Amino acid sequence: MKLYFRFALLFIMALTAGVAAAQTDKAARRDATREKLRGVLTANGPKVNIDFRQSEKNVYNFVGVLKTGLTNAESFEVVVGVSTDDTIGFRIYPHYRGTYINLDKAANGTALARQLLKLSNSNFLFWGADETNDIFAGYTFTLESGFPDQAIAVVLWSIKPLDQYIGQMKPLVDGPQGHQ
Image 1 (cartoon, rainbow, N blue to C red):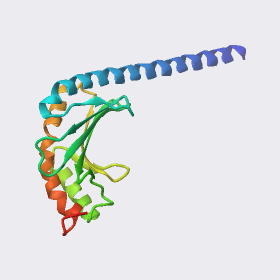
Image 2 (cartoon, rainbow, N blue to C red):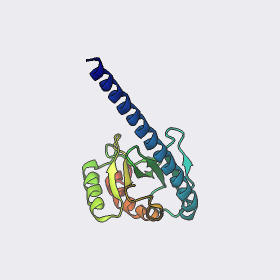
Image 3 (cartoon, one colour):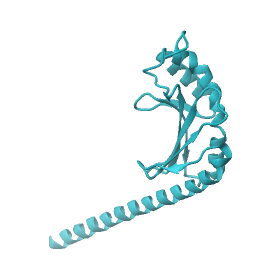
Image 4 (cartoon, rainbow, N blue to C red):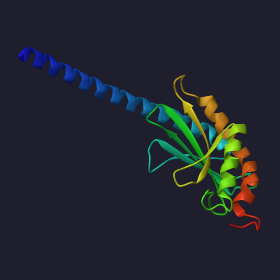
């Protein structure tokens, strides 16, 4: 009986060590991905007038703001993050009238939500709302096929053209009088 107990104990110890090693390997991959992402954002951000910095709240996020060349939005706040699940996610929040566009505060939130669904069907980037109902455009990369450095640059170049859609959203955000 003692022999079985020893084998079971050794098995549990080996399994625990394997899980710990896998978690350490996953953290190291996430750190390496973050550093590759930092390099791509540093190289390509200035080309699209966005200077990225590492977030103070989450060390796996980078934040930048696009303010130039926009007609409808005041700016786009761009959050790019490395997840624990081997993905890189973009969330691009338009700022309009000094704040985020929020489904609950829009003059016609239901119609705005429908418009976001239609835009998701026809745009390169998808549209959504976060847990506070602030709207964003987004894109998610899986890292299964390697690091998508050139594809990240394509997403960065796709941010400024989002401004035209903010123009289309204005009547739903402001209402018929033109103000919230």
